[in-house]
Image (cartoon, rainbow, N blue to C red; front, side):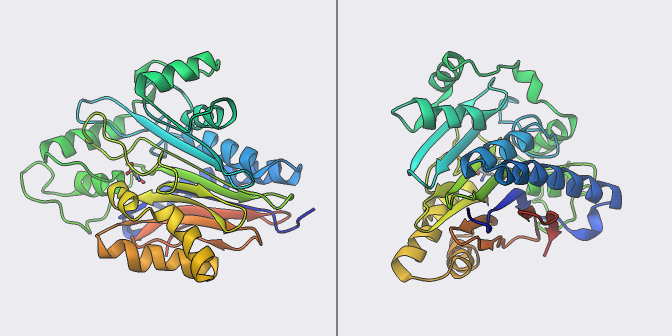
Length: 331
Ligand code: ASP
């Protein structure tokens, strides 16, 4: 049995300035991340698979309205929610993903069923929902995903006629210029009452296997039918025991163009660099070249972890067996 078992999670990256987050809001985030890590840690301690640990962690993050996945998802330009998720097993390279679902309570569980019960990898929209229904997964009314904070954020983004990362949407929402037509100030502190973030988890289990899962509502005011990096294997999610497991968050279009998650694994395989070096290169060097903003979490088969981000903050944490979970928001 491997004693290096570890789980890491993220709840999105973006413009999160310390001055803007009240002590109680900050504590709420830390508590939520801590609880999710503790649950994932229990799965691993009991000898559960990395796949089980990341599914459970992401399911819990989806059920937490603090984050932009499941309940609390951002709004599309039509005022609806379209959810995306992916999961990958590093021991088999099996993967499952769904996108543009509107009524599946936990998209990550649907992605997991695709991995386990389908010969396909990615289902979209109605087909994804039919598949999830046939698998007996829980459905909810589309309004289940509504939250007041996200709705306010969407109205402001719509007035500005732009799509944006939820965190940047928060920036806009907090900007004094939010109701006029000028550009939002990119580094304005976020409103502490508005809570944001795509979610993901990576884990190494006691059997030496890695897995990754990512889930999102996407970006605020996105066009209906827009799909980002999250459900694309290699862009927002990737896992291979031979290298690492990766889950990303940030400006999805750039992560897609950079095939960001896979690039971390590929650099380890082809350049023979460490997890840290590969993850750092993708986030700090390669993504910024095309204005890619965000971060990722990654773990390798030795239990090394990397959690780089090129934004002001990223909700994140990790937990090793027998140790208290560590959580962080800022640099
Ligand atoms: N990467 C996600 C997307 O583009 C958004 C995020 O991470 O906040 O859909």
